[in-house]
Length: 135
Image (tube, rainbow, N blue to C red; front, side, top):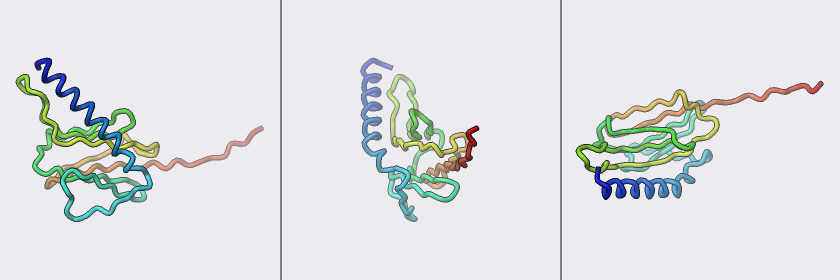
């Protein structure tokens, strides 16, 4: 990869991360959006249920192998990209960062991509409080 393309890619990823920070506050634990039957492209919807949170987004036309879901700096990062091939920069189609809460069960996150809809299901953990007797 040439220095120009590497710098261009790095600048883009930095900008995308900053933009993600600006919008991540819209997805706090108290926010619940009714998921419409037809999802606009690129919007992320969150549905809170008793035992899980489901995130859905329309990324129609993307290939399954281009979808990358990672946990980075207490954020669930979703990006859809074609990886660097033949010294060309990565092509990023979609990028979102969603904050991770303490009660997310990160070891059991499941995702699926069907008919253009990416669905990520995050189980919730409910911790019980116990009393400790002081002697």
